[in-house]
Amino acid sequence: MEIYQLRTFVTVAQQGHLTQAAELLHLSQPAVTAQIKALEEEVGMQLFERSAGGVSLTRTGQELLPQAQAILGAASGIINHARQLKGQLSGKARIGVTLTPDTLKIGPWVAGLVERYPLLDIQLRHGVTVDVLNLVRKKELDAGFYLGKNPYVNVSTVKLAELPFRIVLPVGWASRLAGGGLRELGKLPWIGISQFSSLSKITAELWRELNISPKKVAECDHLDAILELVASGVGVALAREEAAQAWQDAGRLTVLPDVRKLAELQFVYPADRAGDPVLETLLQELLQVWRLPAVAA
Figure (tube, rainbow, N blue to C red):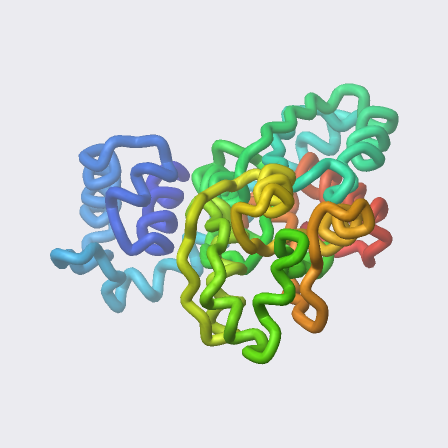
């Protein structure tokens, strides 16, 4: 029985699907199937039940899963401890960045890391929030920032803040709501958000809360571009409160009063990387910048 077979067993159990497990393990599906078959032959019992929709653990598989996870955790602990014994922290950290750098406090965070851990190779990669989360899930990124709720069991999250969003309208459009209240928002054209941005889900949630179903006249996934489109009279949109207020103060658009939508800003990382020295350092340094209580990674 090999460690890589146990890792494959645990990943297939978590995903419930051979193809998705193969994607996460960077293996072909036949290779994953072969490893599971070899493990089943070694233990002498079937570990999974196959169906058209995927795979599920047998009773034997359910019994063995916690032990397999414990073995992988112990192996990871040995590696992590060995790295700590070598002395100064080193390694690569691929971090997915979304929103604006000042919102995420990227500058102070990275400055502190560079000063205290000169051997740490920090790589920042910008992307829309859903892409960042998916790349973390696939372990193509070591960590990242995500706006919204995380649906993946194999991705851990640490909540950094709740960011407020406001409805913004072109100057003069507020009069169109007179007499009809917030339901009139459903009759105005809206700037849609790309489905690859979690702001799309947040906007959809707001529409459900307001019981409206507006027509989308354009689609955009760049926050500053959305504000420019609103200011140009294209339509209504949801925008970060701080930026929306600044544009209103400049006389470029109108912030709708009395409606405020909160969205969770999360720091996300692969669940099985918990305890990794590089990841734990990234997290603890980030929490210091955000002035949040320290937690175990």
